[in-house]
Length: 178
Image (cartoon, helix red, strand yellow):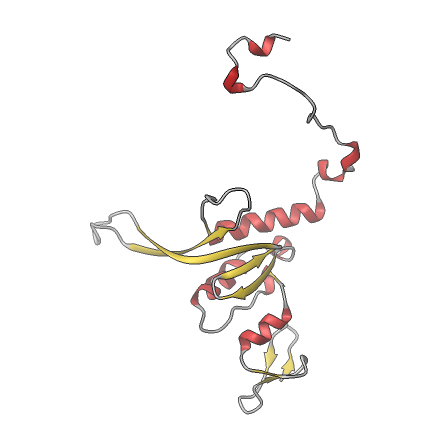
């Protein structure tokens, strides 16, 4: 097996997946796992995993300047680490709107992302293509930062000590009262 310039491998069937890792890999999945997190623009799916094929498809749809900052790592079937956040992905079916050809609607299959939240177990699922785009934007912003992100934390304004009237406890005139 020889590494190629695009990060993939060239191998013969007789040799299997052997090469830069110093042992005989049993599958391409093992080779990809050894590579670790990959940027979205170069993400390579595990053969035979239709969900992972969708991840590759949508990851490569992200503009290159954003996608290079988004790191994706397939931990196991349906379990991924996207820019350090562990998420689950699964196919879900929905019924599309009715059409003259299909008056009862067409069944649509789409991959949804479920984030594991420590504070809230009811975090809603998000379609894969939107999740990857949002994650890429966040990764890009975290790397390059906005003007506010460039101000050191100790120099930022904070109003944590401020005591005020909660909206639920207020009336229309409470904002004028001191």
